[in-house]
Length: 100
Image (cartoon, rainbow, N blue to C red; front, top):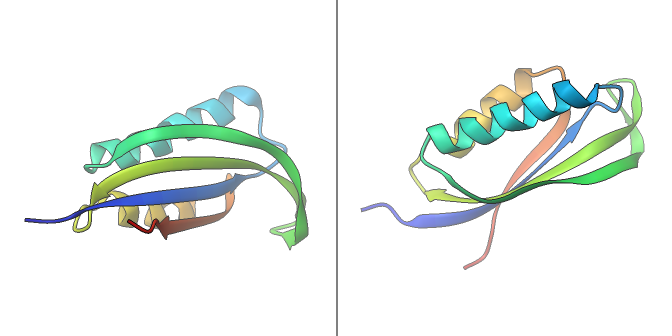
């Protein structure tokens, strides 16, 4: 039996994306998590913020944070990580396991 783990996923979306494309991107990545066994507690935009250093030619980005839980052996976080790495609209991301 696999243990359920809580995760905090933060990703930065390129700042010059239009609102409809941003909404579609968030919905796609939320569904990647749920389709692979995760349960999303919250998924929300923080705001557009200035970055500490230039990333992929951008000095600012739109921060999005997702709190989710999934079985430790679920594909949800690894699939999210894999697809976020190859998506041009996401300039940085991090998946963090929360303490129990």
